[in-house]
Length: 356
Ligand SMILES: Cc1cc2ncn([C@H]3O[C@H](COP(=O)(O)O)[C@@H](O)[C@H]3O)c2cc1C
Ligand SMILES: O=C(O)c1cccnc1
Image (tube, rainbow, N blue to C red; front, side):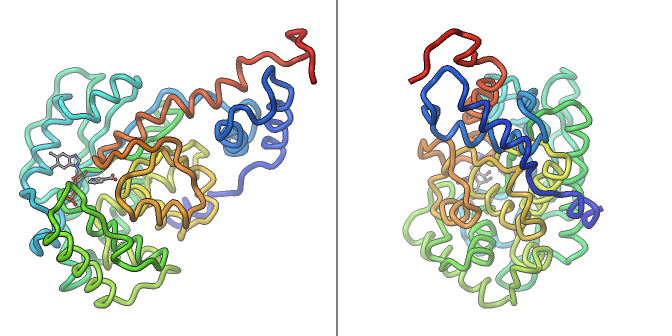
């Protein structure tokens, strides 16, 4: 399933992109006046294979949750149980991601791919409310400073879970997928993935996550450096890199991105966890980048290194460092606006407006 998904990922459609560029030039506005929205609309036409591309509606957020053996190294001040507790909060609709999803009209799907502590009971209430998918591969990764975080089989199972969730959401009518994550400690494997795929130094890849103090930050950089030294990491073997230093939610997010790209549906990337997973997806299938839209620039420095490597410019930059899918959800109206222009704005001809 991983191999067939990767094989299904194709380049953007040049004819659709040319049509979108040509249409942009005839709309009642100075050429280029919509800045980054114009190339975005062109790219989405290329992804859809037609102009105008469909409006990216409805949106579906998939929050992949997992725990991390590296938590034992003291890389975050938060107890591991917070991962499971926040799942309860997501299902009850009380987290920031829920507030932003309601605002954007997006559905919320929470996927347990690797939570270590018992989950709260399913909400079971509102059928339109947040939904829980139970797909636990193992109860947290192993400590990546000691051994590989995952076996290749475990990493593959998590990637395939992400592909499956993407397929289900697209079959359910989603016009855009949004990446979300929850996993106490998960900025540490994200930094290791970013260092492995981009080649930046662990100090540049590593940030303060939930907001660690100077002492914890120094330890976190040492942990990422130790992980990079401990494992042989070949960026041409993304499954091997995900297994050695990744997390179950990172692997599943990689799958979600690959699944979206294979179905030619855009995937709006959130913060540092999402972009670290996007590096793995691009290593599996370079053309998957065509389906990626960088929602925002996380305050985590590794996110900027990853976006540079992917050649993506984030749509908004608000200093967010939360995850869950929050930054991507805030960027959603920008993506919709970029496409709506191609659907609704009059041409100079049709509106009787004189050209320069
Ligand atoms: C209450 C709470 C809600 C969150 N929502 C997302 N994260 C974010 O912070 C965690 C990563 O940061 P670190 O690597 O420093 O632990 C992840 O769970 C991520 O989703 C949260 C963290 C907390 C504490
Ligand atoms: O950029 C993110 O997604 C992020 C940053 C800090 C903590 N958790 C997530």
